[in-house]
Length: 585
Image (tube, rainbow, N blue to C red; front, top):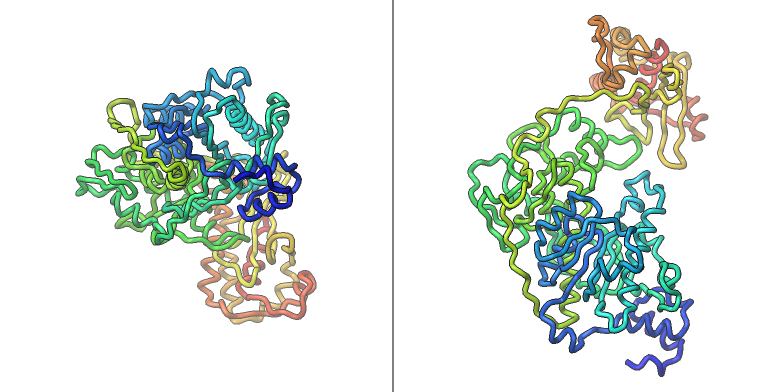
């Protein structure tokens, strides 16, 4: 289309029709450049080319590269500064030159000597700065923005070369990163010669990996100059499809493993990082269950994870006692287990012949969690291939376990686990477990302690609601006693409370127990920890069978600024019990 003959208003109309971004402040020639970036690119150069080359920045273990490789593209260059991921990428992409270095160390006059000219550039700058999981999304964004700018600098440099080969480029990151990515950048903003043209970003989309065949509902920002892939419109791939294909890790009858995503079948002894015991310690399972099902102010999650659903986002951090943990019921057991590294890899879309190199499961887990979802990468690659009207054949890849030391995981993962003590100044603020009624919960905490001088103050607080509208209140037992002492269960509860107090009597010892610090005196070993205390209270409250009973407490109406209300007796009893305990500490 001859855009030069059209008015600026007509060009803006075309931008709206094509869902372009950032055109409102552009001049006519800039809008033309924006529109031209979306035109199908089928040139004699591509029509006669048998290999379409790709450079992958922040390549990690190779998720982005793998998607393009599976679609027949020739990944010729990869760059990452983390050695374990670099080694994994290099091993699995033997036809690619993989460089281990920091992208920020590439000076402008070094770009051509380090980075080859390619048809496509892809990259996924580290997302930790922008992720909601990092300090609730409030982490310093400086480094993250620097890495994005350096990547865009290389893109613009390659794109602006005379007779540039570069036709497409893609950048992947978490959705929050979009807030920090402009619609266009001047060359000067990216540290290049100001006479070079601007870098215009025609597309900013949030894509969901499960829309393209992935077992994960992983949302990612995809920006750049690329072709938006078509949705598969297929039924979702649930976790059980992946797990059933691999089989239980401890099942000895398996001889062959069929890949759940690719036409690959391997002998059992050719599949790495799957056949080991990943049962987690009971204390981890208890903590994870509590955080998922009974978090103080966040919603309820499945425990263990249901396998008839999409997999939640696989995180880079290997943690099995948090809300983000992915945990399965262990086969033929009441225990719980972590996914094997191979299960995680297949859930991320890696084929079963992809081999991860690392000294331990933590390293391999991080490589997988940081990767671009292979199914999403394949969809992006396929859209470009279709747009270029090409038929590509991927290079043969034969990976043999004996070629390198893979540190194949075969031993029980947590067999040598020993619970380690925490620092003596560790904070504690936890509510009575599995006891939240009408947004009310009773919490034990030590946050007002003088941690610097190891003087620990424990208190009992009644919380209502969460977020900005949350309220909390401390009410003395002298006010509660006249209200609850006439109840039919009070005598039983109070007698039990006197026995309970024999196990919680020293504030410093209570803190030592909180920190899992070993105590030598035998006579002090019967002292409960804060967690044990709360568990005993929760059990007793349930035993009293007062779930549907309520009681009026006028003082709480005033504290919570509400009209005459009735409060769950379970909550009021918990408040009374904890008050009595902390009063003697």
